[in-house]
Length: 203
Image (cartoon, rainbow, N blue to C red; front, side):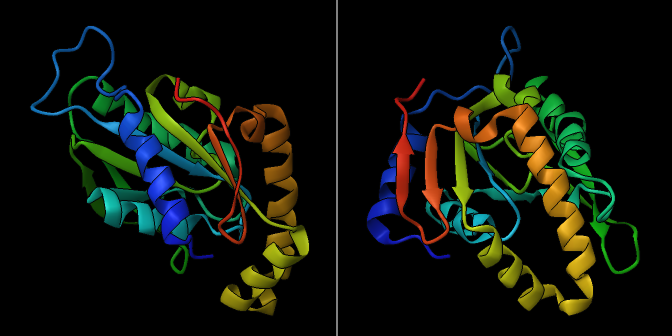
């Protein structure tokens, strides 16, 4: 999914109009404050493509939730917990965040990535906009697509052998989103073809 220029411009305007929430209250700010943009939605809906487009427009870093999970068995909640602990809590206290990328081929943590304070930060992936990061989030974006289309995209990328993993993951993410009400809490909703479906006023 590639978002068209008009939609992308509208989302970027929303980001820049939103108040920065990092670092946290009472913490002397670093030399610049950070607007955290969380791009969430079920697997295969088009989040990564949108996040890449936003990062280019905002000239900022992207943290991929795929790098924070512990493999297929982990689920969105595990990645969200590590996002808070490793990246956002340090930024909220005025320090750089840091994480080690999970390597899906070796099933082990790989190289370290530093996440310094910056004007914007995009986080994308299932669980990126969990309630536990609400206090730090400037804008929550939800991207959705039909289950059949998402599965088709996923198997085209990962191969037919990944079907059991994908089916289990889709069940896990459905339970996560039902509990978190992520879609309902989103500030902007897009479909899997880059069209805006709903937009709330900037908080």
